[in-house]
Structure formats: C-alpha cells, structure tokens
Amino acid sequence: MAAQSNLAPVIIKRKKVIAGGHHGGAWKVAYADFVTAMMAFFMMMWLLNATTEQQRQGLADYFAPTIPVNRVSGGGDGAFGGESIFSEETLPQNGLGATTQYAAQQQQQRGDSGTATDDGAQDATNEELEEIIAELTALGGESTVMKNALQHIVTRITDEGLVIELFALDGLPLFVEGTDRPTELMETLVEMVASVSQAVTNDIAIGGHVRAAPIVLASNPVWDKSTDRATRTRLMLEQNGLATERMQRVTGHADREPVHRNPMATRNNRVEIVLLR
Image 1 (cartoon, helix red, strand yellow):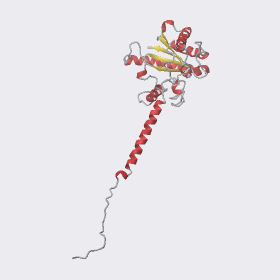
Image 2 (cartoon, rainbow, N blue to C red):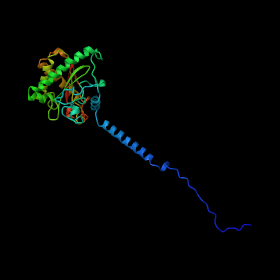
Image 3 (cartoon, rainbow, N blue to C red):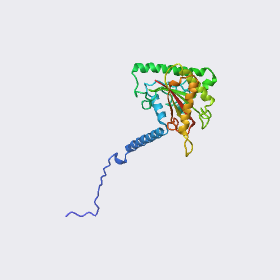
Image 4 (cartoon, rainbow, N blue to C red):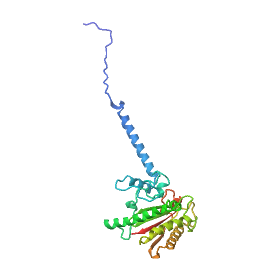
C-alpha cells in the first residue's frame, strides 16, 4: 500500500471574468443623452408657455420661407423696427411679431362669403391696400407729430380687408381714462386714417377694445366703454370727411381679445378700423 500523505489537497479555483456587463460605462453615456434631451424638452415647453399665441405665430411666420419679412408698417425701418423679436413691447405692438403683413390662416378675418376670391382679384385688391399702407407710412414724414403718431399704428391685410390698428401705450392714451373723450393723439391718428381712406371707396368696420379692469366690479364697464369708443371713432371719421354710408359695422369687443399677455396692459386699449374688401 502506498504511504498516506499528510499534505492537504491543492484546490485551484478558476474565475471567469466577462468584460462589460452591468459594470461597463456605456449606459452612462446613454443616460446622459437622455437627461440632456429631457432638459431641452422641458426648456422648450417652458418657452412655449411663456409666449402668447400671436408671438408664437409671429416666430413661426418669420422662419417660413414663403412669407416675406418686414411687411408690417410699424414705424420702423428694419425687419423688427429696430427692436429685438423678444422685446416685451415690440411683439405685442406689432400684432403678429412684425414679420408678416398677412395674418395666420387660423386668425384671418373672413368676408361676407367666408372665403377668399380668385387669385387675380385677390392680388389686385392687395395691391390697392398696400398702396394705402404706403400712403399712411408716408404721412409720418410730414412732421414730427405725424412721425410720433405713426408709432401707434399697425396695419395688416386679412381676408376681410385692411386692418388699421390704433393702439395706446403707457403715458400715451387714445382716450381720457374711463371715458370716450379722444386725446390729441387720437385726433391726429384718426385724421391720418381718414386722409388715406378717402382715396378708396371701401366700406368700413370699426372695433373697439379695452384692457381688463384691475378689480372685480359690480358693474364692469368694459363693454360699454369699448362700444362708446368705437362709436366715437366712427363720428370722428365722418367729421374728417368719410361718408356715413361707408360705415358698415361698429363693434365693442370689451377686454375679450387682448394682444398683450397681461390683460390689464395699456397696449390692449386700441381701435381697429377695417377697410372691407
């Protein structure tokens, strides 16, 4: 018999190591990309929530290759009248971001038929309306008063016709606060509009808009105030030579259609004069 050994048996344990797996770093790169994408997404959502529908439409129109830039008369020379497109005051003043003369399809005002005419007739009408815009802009060179007044006018062409918007700014109201008594600025603006409107025979529609009341009142005056100011504008146009027969509609919109994100902003005090097609 073989002699028994007192030595313990040698046990060899081989451990198989697999590279990668859950201890690798590839997942960290993917996770970082995911977090970056989520941050960009929420930042975009925040920016969209911080702008109004008209501002978003203005930005969209600016990047649309088929829409010409600088087609709104707002008293400036550049695409944005010398202001940044993100200016708190420029965008609300210019209505649709000061990038297009033609309103967005979902915001276009409709005429009696509810649809646009054929292309040839539409182009001819637009040319006539553009001539009125050019004449209105030219009035700003007659005097310093006219030039300053032109900063309170925005024009845009819609399916319904040429919209001439007269708006107030802080410290420069169109009407005496709480009344329909026009200021000297409003009288100058109406005189300018009446002057260029005499060159055509289009019927006219007038809409009054006011800012929201800062407090809840038992009797909210915004409806009466907007209607009274629209009516006063009609009377002023007639006093400046426009025929009464051309007045087709006078409407008070109260504070229901603000152009500024703050419903109590002075910019929401405005009158829209539409030269109907």
